Amino acid sequence: MNCVSYSKDHLRILPSIGDSMKSWASDVQTCGVNANWIAELDQLLGPTSQYPTDLQDIVNTLRIGEMLTAEQGLILWKFTDINLIGHLAHLAKQARFGSNVYFNSNLHVNQTNICTLACKFCAFRRGKRARDAYALTIAEYLSRIEPYQNSIDEVHTVGGLHPEWDVEYYEELFSACKTRFPHIHIKSLSAVEVKHIAEMSGLSPRDLLIRLQQSGLDSLPGGGAEILDDDVRDIICFGKETSDEYIAIHRAAHSIGMPTNCTMLFGTIETVEQRINHLCKLRDLQSNYGGFQCFVPYPYLPDNSRLPEAQLASSSEILRMIAVSRLMLNNIPHIKAYRMNIGDRMSELALHFGADDFDGTVGHEEIMHEAGSQTYLSYSKRQLAKFIFDSNGMPVQRNSNYTNFRRFDDDDDYGNSIILPTLNSVVNL
Image 1 (cartoon, rainbow, N blue to C red):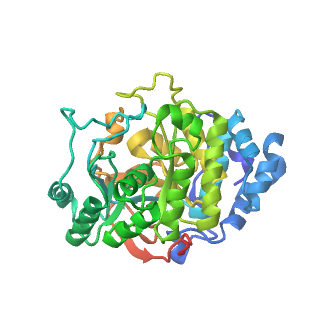
Image 2: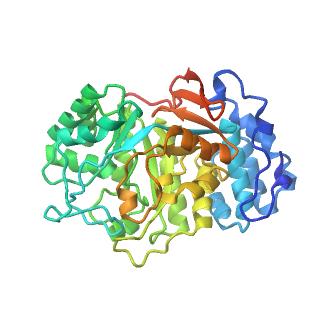
Image 3: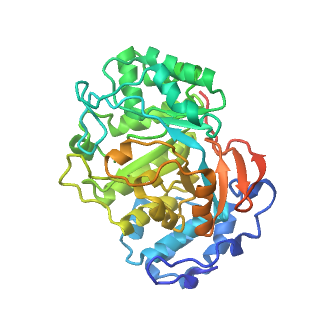
């Protein structure tokens, strides 16, 4: 496949996905990362001379596996042909993963919507005296998981900054969850929750995470990054952790062997330059620690929030953000199409713009739906697989750490389970 094969018809950019991947799709690599992805990408890109002049330096940088500069990121963002940018991002994804598209069996449980902050973009937060405020007891939290216990292997839990909950509540919560459901991976707490609980408990974020890890916390979901620029944060989420604090909290997690995801909320008041700088900050930390598993970009949803000055992201902007993320973040392996935010159909398109992860079964979700998401909840694994098949991908069920895979060989059955060593080299200090 080379550059001249892409179509300029709107959102129609791809020939058959599998044709170029026959060289490496074998053995355990059929479900994991291709260790020779840089050489594979070099072949997939084809001759540099076939690309527009504005992109030739970028193509040459991509083919040798080096990171794009911030200036090159801006060129990608401003380049008029979104289909070509999507094509490049798809090749970068294809070189790593072939036609594989990952999903997991998970459940979202929000432990409380009571929050001491009042971020302008947030439709989820409630004051303690609000009629619909809630704070789950340990028993209530476990009861939310119980109906799904035989069909999930991950619970995703984030919530508000409860004014009374310190480390002891979360130690009890995670310990009770792990005792009752030992097979379920606990992915919980945004960076600002870590900061809040640490301050409530008189602990450093690192010491807090060590205690919570010992109680059963397995990973952080990466939420709360918004835009890593404090001028923006002072307007949209005043009082939240600073950009440096977000990075420091994830550095602390990575330093104790706790993997995390990382995120971006775009479409509020930020500039394109601030988005690109956000990506650069994430990959700089990744270069030192390697603990980010997946990047999750998602646009601001305006319902029930208080940010009338928001610019809002168009559909093409969402796809461009995913594509540019794939090309800029060459040291973060996975890019997620976050269905709970952008919807099923946009997520299918995102699989052709560099995303390789289709999120999970979810079961229940409040934060995005309070803000206006209409995405259907409680898909079965087979229904998710059909979305991926319809996008010309190969569905692969994964565990939370991308180390255990089960491939859908057809519409009716799974293939064999494949277990890999950890893909990211998390540093222990």
